[in-house]
Structure formats: structure tokens, C-alpha cells
Length: 443
Image 1 (cartoon, rainbow, N blue to C red):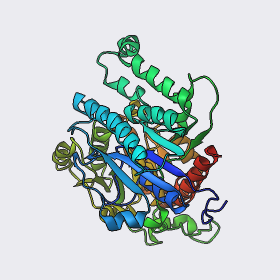
Image 2 (image 1 turned 180 degrees about the horizontal axis):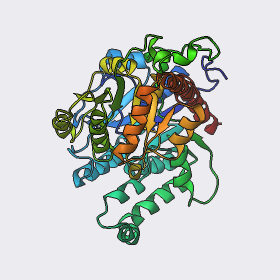
Image 3 (image 1 turned 30 degrees about the vertical axis):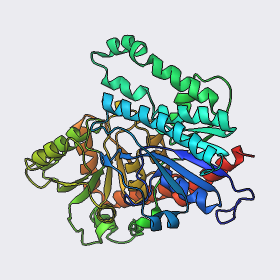
């Protein structure tokens, strides 16, 4: 079935996620907005259940303008919840409890009154627990197919927050996180299908769940058309007279060997799970060696003020520019003007394939990556970037210094990044596949 063909049997589909930006809150669409848009375009009656508190902005939401809702073709229902200011807090836990209870109550009232049709499929994201647990009860009562969408590894991601040395964490993990593990196992046992944002999330979460169930992996992805194609290396022939005398930068900037600085970008949240101290320390190492590199930081978080202060202290030819949270157009332009995308994330955060990696690949940026596993394997397979050791400034500085001095290799990696995006991250391809898989679960 092609992307343009309508489905033979329109379905009523509920999508349950309180976190992602909704229509009217900024572009581009993230995972659930993209999915709702594709499902609606395929002829389904789609309802997105979200919270009235914005997780990203930490402020009360307003319903999407009517014109936006009409253009998108799906409905957005907002559940009243208590606000929270920090992501790890009792207030957030209470807010998620509000979401689960409110969603279940509002859904039953809407079906009973005829305002909404009984759903054929309910897809609910995990985290949080409360949304998919309410969805499981509703699916049983309304005879709907239940799909749990794994967006993160809960509760494993909380393990790094436990105090003490590693041996102590191993001892206390069952005490503090065992209940959450049991909740996830019970929830996945009830699911008719499991989708995931990465292969790692699916394999880890289902490892101790008995029985088989349909599973689908759809990465967070990006829209490739937001970005121009990266420049191509010049077709040098090593046998031509004088070719051996061409500078290493010739492939990037022409045979005159333009000495412009290597331009790098880090995007995303500015929190402790990111390897930002290493980025700043590597900048100081590069400056000490006389290497001209620009490092742009685009994002917001609790570390933004500290990063701005530290960036002003970097001397010499390496510059760190902290932009804060950019509008989407400015963000896309920044990526299009850079050479390298920094996936500077601590492996203990258990992030597997973050949004930033999808954006970098779509923009054709050579990726310099600290995450082992799934993302590193894809980067190696597509020859899309290089790895460095998280927490090691000398490792990161060596990789960036090498790319600054070898622009032909840089351009080859940029081409590989674009191949990676086309193969794994193109939402124009991956989300229609996701939709077709959901349709298959409803027969």
C-alpha cells in the first residue's frame, strides 16, 4: 500500500501522550504530531489525548486555534493536570497521576455521550506509566486494540539518580525501582502490540515479558526537506600532476584551501545528562593547540547560564557561542551552516537515538558521537561520523582537530550522514510505515 492510497477501512484511533508539542506550539511536528497527521491523512478518525500543562515550556497550554485543528485533520483533547517545574519531582508524579485519572474519566464520558466514537486502537506512550495504564483499562472496557509506544527506558533511566557507588546502586535498585519494573512488565503483557522509538528500547523492555507480540520500531526522525543537501567532495584524481600537493581542505573549500574554522553544533536540553562539560573542556584544549573551531550551542535548560559564563572564558581561536532556544527557522539555518553535529550525551543517561541525531543527519552534518550501541552502529554502517569517549576532553578534541584538518574526509562523512537520514530517519517514509503497522493490528 503506497503512502497516497487511502486505507479500505477507516478506524477510530486514540493517541495518548502528554509530553510532545501540540499543533500551534511550534514546528516541526515531533513524534506524535507527525503520527496523528499521517493517520488522519490516511482517512482515520484520530484523537490525541494530552495534558493541559506543557512539559517542555512548563506553562499552561491553550487549545489549538480552530484553523490549525481543521488543517491538521485530527482532534486534540487536553486533560487538566497540576503543574510541575522540574522533571524529577513529586509534583511531576502527581501531575502524571492527574493525567491518567482525568484521561480515563473524560474518555468514558465522551464515549457514553456520543461526543467520541469507541476507539478501534489506543496507542499510549510510556513514559509516563499513568497514561498507558489508563489506556489498558479503557481498551479492555471498550474492546480496543492496545499499543504501548516505548519512548524511553523507565525505570532504568532513574538508576543514575540513585546515590552512592556502583555496588551500592546494584543493591538498592530492586528496592527503589522494582515496583516500576513490575508495572511495566504487567502493562506490556496486556499490550496487543508494542512500538518503540529505538530497537534498544524494545529489546530491553520486552526481555522479561513472556510471550510474543507484534513489535515495530520507528525512530523519532526528521523532515529532510527542511535542509539543503550537504556539499559534495570534489572528485580528485590522485594520479593527476600536482594532486599530491593539494591541501587537505581542498575537498571542502576548493583548491585554494580556505582556512575557515570548523563549525560544530550541539542542540538539545542543557541538563546534567548531556556531556557539556567535556565540550567546554575540549574547546579549551583546541584553543591551546591553535585549532580554529566554532562550537554553537542551541537549546535551553538549567545549565544555560553556566554555559554562557564558561563560554566567555574560552581563549584563543576556538569559540563557543551559546544561542539559547532558537525558533525553528533559525535552528534549521544554523544546522545548515555547520559542518559537525555533536551528539554529546552521557551513556548512563540511557538515551539511544535522540532527536538531535536525527536532525544532524537530516542536515548532512558529520556526527561526533559519544553514545555506544544502536546509534554508533548506524553511524558506522553509513560512514556518517566518528566516536569519542564521553567525559574525555582530549578524545573529543582529537576528533574535532582531525576533521578541522581533513575537509575531504569531513565532506565524505557529511554525505554518509545524509544517507543515514534517508535510510532510517525520513519521516515521510517511516511514519507511513508506522501507520500501516498500526492498521494491521486492527485487521
